[in-house]
Image (cartoon, rainbow, N blue to C red; front, side, top):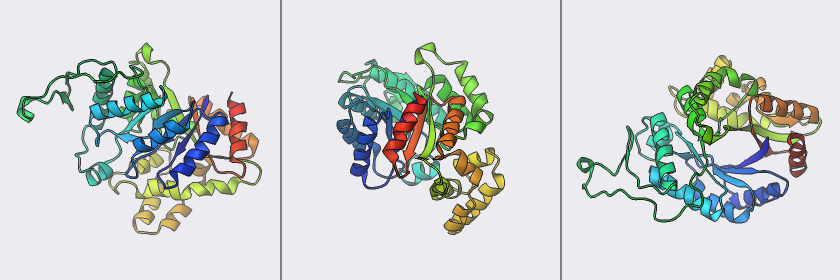
Length: 343
C-alpha cells in the first residue's frame, strides 16, 4: 500500500502545492488534481510537475467529452515529459449536467467512449499511425462527415513512455467492469471498504477475467480525511457539507450517481431526504442528516488504534493507494505515522 493525496477545486492552489511538496518529503507517493467545472487540471498539473520530484501526478479527473481522444493523448504525453515519466491520465464520464450544461456536448455512450479513448491514446503513445474505426470515434473523419481531406497521422514528438497509466473514475457496473479489464487504476468515490465487494465485486471479477497480464494488478485508490488523536471524532463532521452536496445537489433529481450509490450502501431513506432538503435550499438541514455511519466509514479520523483498523479495512478491500486528506492539528506528523503503518 502506498500513500496518496489530492488537491481540490478551490483557489489557493499555490499554497496547496507547497503542502504537496512537504507531503512528498514525508513519503506521499501520489498527488491528484481535480477539474470538474472549475479551473482546468492540466495547467495546474504542469506547475505541480515543476515543484515536485518523485510524486506520481494525476488528473482526477479529465472528462471524456470536452477534449478529443488525440488531445487527451497529447496532454498526457506532454505532462509525462515535463514530469520525467510521472504522469497519470485520470478519466471519467462526469455527468450530463456538466457535459451538456457547461461544455455544450452531447452526453452519450460513456462506457464505449471511454474504451475507445483508451485504445486511441495508447496507439498515439506507441507512435502508431492513427486509423481507428469505432462506434464512438472514427479517425480520420469520414469524407461524408467533413472535407474528405483528413489524413492518418502519428504523433509528431516522441513520448517519454509508450504507455502512460490510465486510471478510470467509475461507479456503474459496466464502467467498473471496463476499469478492471483495461485500466491501470481505479478511482472510486465514497468507497466504503466493508460494502465494496457487495457493490462492485461482480463487475470487478468480470473485468479481471478479461484483463491482459501485461497491465499488471489494478491499482485502487480510496481513503478520506485524516486526523489522528483522542477526542478528534467531531472532525468527521467536516465532511457533512461535501457529502450533502454530492448526495443531494449533484446532477438532477432524476439522475444523481452519488445519490444512487448512497442508496446502494443501504441509506435509501436518508439519501431521499438529503436530496429533498438540498434541492429546496435547506442545505444545513441536509448536512445534519448525513448518516453518521457513512461519515465514520469514509474517514481516517480518530484514535491511532481506530485509524489503524480503518487502514486494515481498506487493505482487506483491495485498496493499494491510501488517499489521505490531512485535517488534524499535526497534519505532517499524521502522514508520517500512516506511512510507517502501511510500509
